Length: 208
Image 1 (spheres, helix red, strand yellow):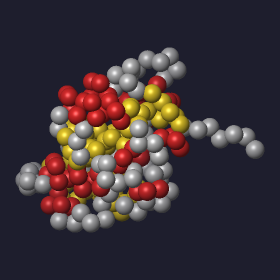
Image 2 (image 1 turned 90 degrees about the vertical axis):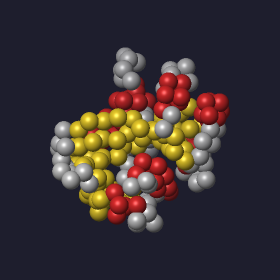
Image 3 (image 1 turned 90 degrees about the horizontal axis):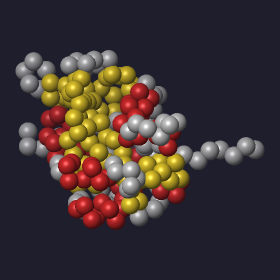
Image 4 (image 1 turned 60 degrees about the vertical axis):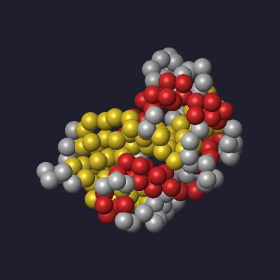
């Protein structure tokens, strides 16, 4: 049988994250972290099977929220259920407000130029959803959750995409039971959502 290629994913040393300032939950201090976390001298691409169980490294994961505001100013967020065929088995059947995934060595480009994080985020979005509306995007914070097994090896970079129309649709069959839902309803029904989604929603919208 031919060998199946092992995916190599972007990681940073957990020690670097602690040196920059460890936190549990959500941080809005993106300027404090992103320059060093994305610096070529600090990132590396390592085998995914090893990294999923090695807390000495953090996998940098783009986590994109789609927000729609109607004419009355009411906010809705795209949310969905993760099917059992998605890559991270520890999140199967969890509800989520975040679209994104691992940055892979394939995102570096053949000539080594470009920004692998931005390329990887664009690739993940293209694979998972169809964005059929103009939008404006911005990075709003980071998520760290050392309480859970999956959280200990990941660090989320949170982006909000403000869409002109609620026209985001799944491309993957494993993104199910999806659609835009009012922020207030999601906050009142957090049970069943993955931890990152709970952290994100409460940090960004909990004061509503």
